[in-house]
Image (cartoon, rainbow, N blue to C red):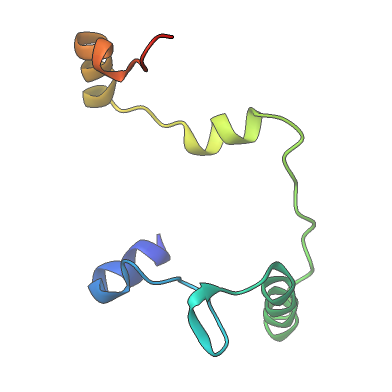
Length: 88
């Protein structure tokens, strides 16, 4: 992925925002600024605007972010007790 490549090439970026606010690198850009920049990029690239899908439920979260690998699954099965929170 392009973002991973940039972070590998520039390891100093690790703790910094990928899209810092203009004049304030300690804060991210606002949603409005991000949307405006995306619209400008689409226009410059002569690409149609794609509507965002939105998250109507947890399906997108599970599909995009829940990616278990074999090592993690084995660790959970063998040592799952360590992952449990304290009981009241």
